[in-house]
Image 1 (cartoon, each protein chain N blue to C red):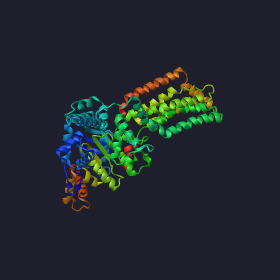
Image 2: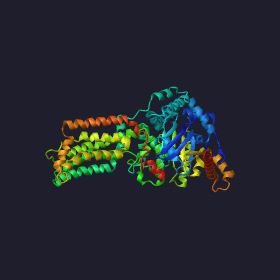
Image 3: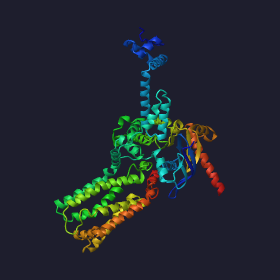
Image 4: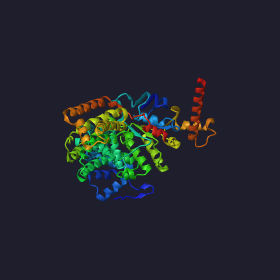
Length: 261
Length: 342
């Protein structure tokens, strides 16, 4: 059963095409979103987070098309979003920051307090819950960001580069949190770190220049890396698979374009 | 009696039937009861035998079920972020597993989690509006008010009231422009993905800005010495409101920051330009400024005009309310362009 379904999604920023007729669907589990810079990962996540309006195509979240204000509000209650570059009020404590998002998510006041403490504990910040945001280190701010994204126990969780700024130990803890969340939540993680995908993700989507270049599992990507296409590439199997899939996609696009001319 | 001895191979004794019966009815001597309790922590077989004996007494069983039912209800009610359906399912499960207390599940459904009281909700809303009042705008507001009073009384600057009134209607606009939107609000991107973001958040923050600035500016205006011809302290209220609602309506097309700047420029154009034109050497004197301000805001005709303008802008805003559903994705330097270029 898919909780997110995207058909012919096109996103254009002035003259740049960020996403070019993308068809995708996602169900519960952890989905890795890979791709080079400018591939359209952030654009896809912003559309799924209902922040950006798609230029064309159809987006269904949790069984409803995002057609009107009512559908948007219903979907927004049930999703969590960690932007790539998120801001905060430096004078807020972690509790206030996450509590403010709980208010934004229209959570009832009587359960919000406990939900905030639970979310902060899950990212391992319980001992700093009453510290001001401006006193936190970069990794802690990012963990507070993850806490705000899961405070409403979302059905759809969108994380844009969540592991940037985390040290290796925190990344390991974060991946196990991802695996745990993926049991009932549709988690989409955009990342540059191939090892995040290899460890935590059940499925992989590779974007290149606004198109879907590859879909599969971390295992199938690793197999691709061990085949002839990836034989001469360095790195671990998943990294080789990533590069092989990207090259294969570019070659296919070049052939199609050439044939059209 | 046997004593607890846990060797490497496990405990050297087990609870027999007579012992668990005596434990259940309370006739087992206290040291033996302690030994038994210690033992059942580690031995599953004896634990279930003792548990069965305790349930069979007929007094502890219902008590345990009561505690269990209450615990399950509390868990179901406090589970954060669960939809009503999920909560109901949990309660159903609790009821199924409690055959001794068939009413537990039904009672659980009847006890709805009490929604937050009205004062509580109001307090949360006011707190959410807070970020609008924390920043540069709050400081600017206080500086203008204090500066106007200090100039008027300390330096005997008679024009203070005119200048203050020329500025007062624009100050709430600055508050609105500085409190909402991708440029002004660091948490804008997160709020744009939330049901309470968008127009609702903008209106809450605008209300907070007006709630602080209207009383404060009116009070300061009334404190300033009033030379003849300058409008009364409350005369700016309707123009200030109309300009603020106008900013919101225009903001649905241009974003609040640009809208605030445009409306403020429009106000300055309407007040200062004619005043400068009337002045002999290009610099408007306080008297000319006061006269022009009077033309703009004094009298029932001007005031009804401002009231009508406020209503029109409110209507426009209602028509354009869906423009705030998504983040603006156009224009140079928009949030996304900044991201993609970084």
